[in-house]
Length: 302
Ligand SMILES: [Zn+2]
Ligand SMILES: [Zn+2]
Image (cartoon, rainbow, N blue to C red; front, side, top):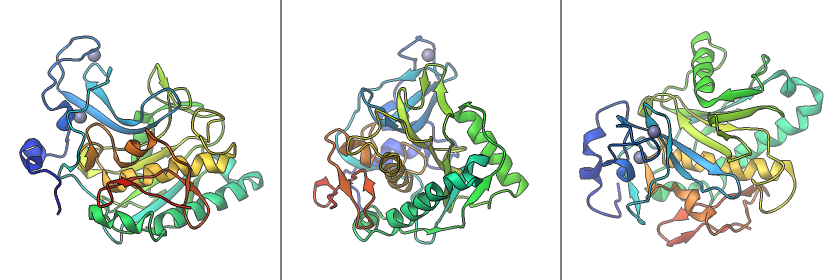
């Protein structure tokens, strides 16, 4: 495992054998919430692609008060924290949540998403290039459509509980720690991390884990926001693939947010979002670039 700096193991040594890795380098010494001042036991970390006007990165929610703490990064170097990474042979499971996706009006949409996931995961430089981070190439299961629609307003915690119930009931395969779920939401559904932080208003999409390094690991893709989440075209699919590509790359390289490959409080695509350039993979899909540590530059496509 290549390391950019030598102190990674020291910084993360306290967490290596626990399932709940609730500290990263940037929050390791924070003892009280910067919003309410109450003492905190740790943070939930969520890998977030922000909407325009907000900053993408590893968002920190303090426990137990649940306030988001905007932390100053303590490092500008790319580092590996010892957490789980995506290996060869891991599996993606796309989940289309709601009867909307079973209807004929959505059939093209579903087909385009299925193709995008395959194209993103197999691209010769975009995805294969992540081998420099000791990350492999996954396969794609047949998609699952869940007929029962989500509520129009749901929280990430509710998504996590629902994901666990689908696994328990056998509605979706149990991937364990060797894969991840892409959860696609129908139009009109808003996801929130807190009452003040909802999809499209402050973020576009994200990835997370239900239980630290034990997973299950998942990305959440709300139906594309009409503004704030696409700097290249006005097409919904282009908006979707920009976010999906970022969450797939960041899930693979930082499965338990904050414990894998990070640059301070940023994941690998967050770094490139700051100086955003429109890029496409060879399949034609718009994608968000990731930081190439060998070239010391952001990945470039077509
Ligand atoms: Zn942290
Ligand atoms: Zn607080």
